[in-house]
Image (cartoon, rainbow, N blue to C red; front, side, top):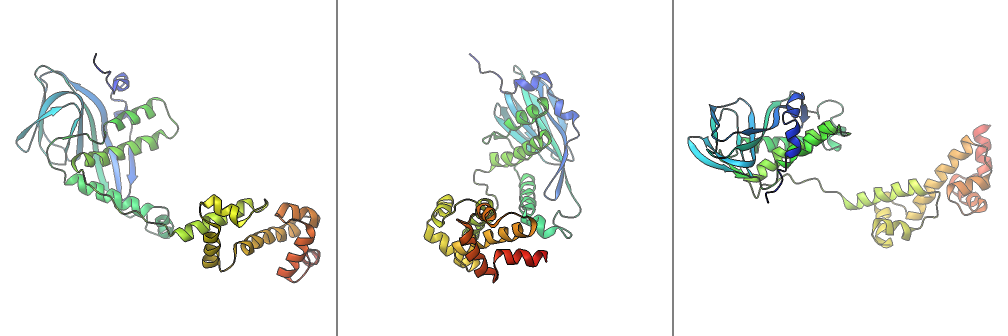
Length: 316
């Protein structure tokens, strides 16, 4: 019993994505999708020699045939792909006795003027990963230009991304534009992977783990200071020892965990004293202090005056 055709859903409307004006920015490149469809060549069909000024990606989901690239004839079969870069002349034939299906991606890469990192927002953009996207897009397009002019097996299943993109459009999925964009990029990256078993990407930035854990701890304290918090409890949330966490606070903030927690709570107390008429008992309860008496003691030690005197000064 033959397996069902994986791309059968696309047969409903195989040219659907061709009707979309798909263009997006990836790094420093604009990518314009000229064609993204499923087609079928009846047995014996010949697509005579031609070339394009853009990149064309050919994937064979079923059937067989052959392609002539640089004067060399290569057999095509199910699960194969090949890339024709700008100016590469090629001739394709379906088998004499068997039709050949093809998924075709035809894209134009346009180098855009100006980088997303230019201008006042450059450093902020870099912090959010644009520099890495630029570098990866540059590396991808460079490697695409260097691929050999011969077929390869779709080892990384690039062609499956066609169905992902099609179904996002067909079902009008939330974020369909983003899904289609990511599908196109995945096709490009996975196609390179079909030719280069050992192709490597960039070394992504590594975190300073002490700073990272400190930021996680600080955020957790900011979010939960009203609750009973302990050094041991927060350390457990970060999956490190309490000794490690204490050392991190000493190195990153030059104070202990408990001192930092107390500062956060007192900052909230000052806000409540300024903006509300709540009693000290209620403020202590809302701010994570065990009692109003303890809050009174800690507040005077930190600010040199009692909470009530602090409030009187502010409203005086």
